[in-house]
Length: 398
Image (cartoon, rainbow, N blue to C red; front, side, top):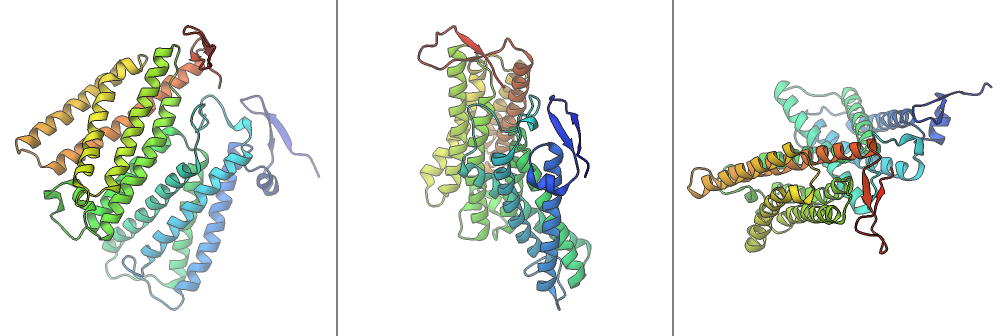
């Protein structure tokens, strides 16, 4: 048997140029190629398992595309389970087997000093992926139902389609898990909020809910209220995760900058906590608490944006000015609501879009600053030990 050919990768480390499945399974996170291979193997496993189980369940039946007991419902539930398993498997694999050569300065993933994923963080992100898969497949089935009116799906075709859907879900979710970055995390948050809110809106039995406010979606005992409140709770947990990673990557050279970074982290985490509290305390049962935390989110956001130039002096001025514009638009919408020109639902929707857009843009700018700090050896990180002097910076280490 010949030994596998070896060559140097761009980090200077030796990598084995072997396509052996045994080698991939033995060292699943040794390189980006092995992670891709594991994702393909996982997708294939879900295709075989999902297709086989589906064929047994579908035997002797003609399935509707959408609705109760349909192919879309089955794929949605199966996709959610596949997403949960694939995401958790990816994080466990990265934690136990990831080779240092996979890491590099340009793509640090979630390996940021000062911020680490805990089990409850992994649980929240895994549930977000599962909900996106569930609602995404159910929504796609509803659209296809309108495109193929009166069509039915036979067992073999249904099993094949279900197997492909589960394979795609597992493949994409696994890669999202092992290549998770703060920026990708923010995009998952945005997708999760969109599909969760749309599901609550479309399933609400009150077609006039929008005449009150956005929180009216969470006031009943229906499934739509549960979906809306659960979306806010999980989204709040994800915002606190993003806050830790976004601020951990900011370079600091003085104690004042370190203090500003910590204050910014606390502010962003409070936004996440208050967002979760909006879902925990429905407006019809906890009116005062609900309105306090909802208003508190907007107030804290405004304080962060206005004080950003002092909290993080190195933040690009264009982004700082954009934040001022966002706050100005929200204030203008509040004025329109006060004079009766807009209803509260419109103000809440636009304000929510602006706030989460700002968070995503903040992550991009913070990531740019982190990249610049790696490229410039002169950038320093404050020493936090008790014997560190106020003007005694130490170089950033990757």
